Length: 135
Image (tube, rainbow, N blue to C red; front, side, top):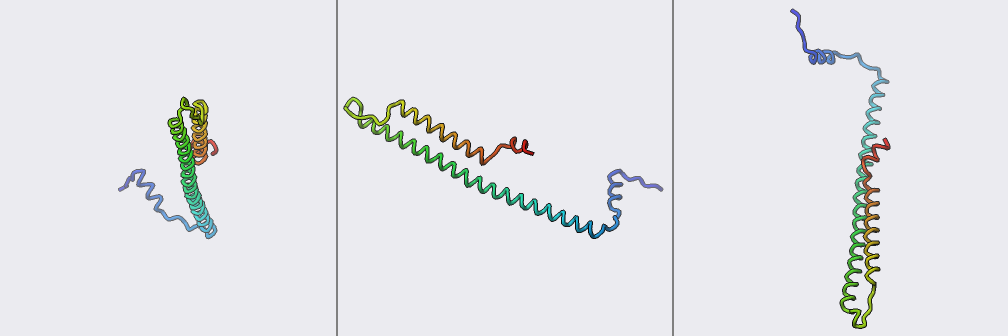
């Protein structure tokens, strides 16, 4: 009686046949190759971990710079409003900034903060497309 095995079972039978023992040099080479792979993976993991820590650190610093800049701009705007209200122009008061200067300061501050924040974030978190082009 002849038994037929399915192709999957036939592959399992073939793989279960013992192979002759490899030479000591081949085994040593395989072991060393596995050690190198593990070492490279560990270095990659440590590099990525340090990269995440630096990104976290510098993204928080970028946020603080933007936050302080916006607070400075808000204080300037508040002081301008208070002095304009308390010393009205028709009562012989003075004006710190004209409206055109205040608009220019507001525009420049907004653009500078946005550009600085955007450049920091792009440097800290490069896009994936750039990463694929390099490979």
